[in-house]
Length: 86
Image (cartoon, rainbow, N blue to C red; front, side):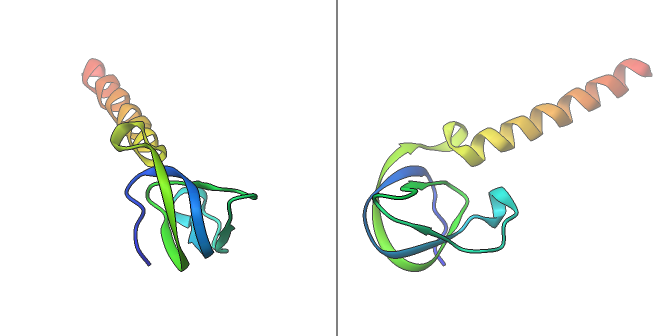
């Protein structure tokens, strides 16, 4: 499936199923529709169907960007702590 490059809100969809395991760890595909769960997150994969979305966040402001930033900040803090200890 296609990788979603940005966060967004579904505005048109046809039997859309998304693999969100990269973000949630859940292996089941999630059905997305306009009236129920229209949020699409970057870093997830389209497994079935098609759709259009309005982009709401990209890069470091997207959900995956926030996660990577937090992981990077945690790694920097640990390295800084080791440097101070000697």
